Length: 87
Image (cartoon, rainbow, N blue to C red; front, side, top):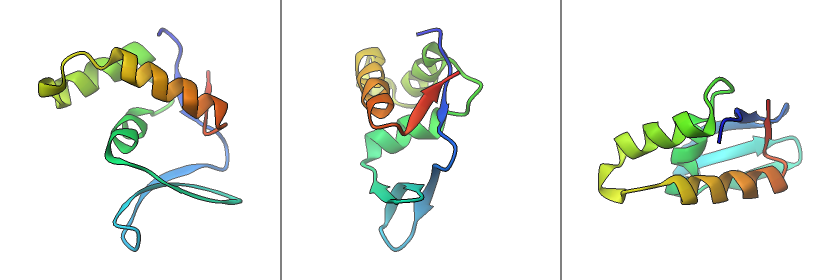
């Protein structure tokens, strides 16, 4: 939780009007993201720890309650997919 995630080189997070969704672009293609994934990736700035990201998301979405498990699961999946890395 004290590690700092960032997008891997070559990956870009952005809004894609044609898809009407946030996407993760990379040299081989694109991943269309659901709202939860987009919210988490929007907080990954390469400077904030996972703990800080969770706190900001819980402040943005207070009705959701604790988001630590969900954020941690997404980050683990994003690491396995090689979308992000820890610095």
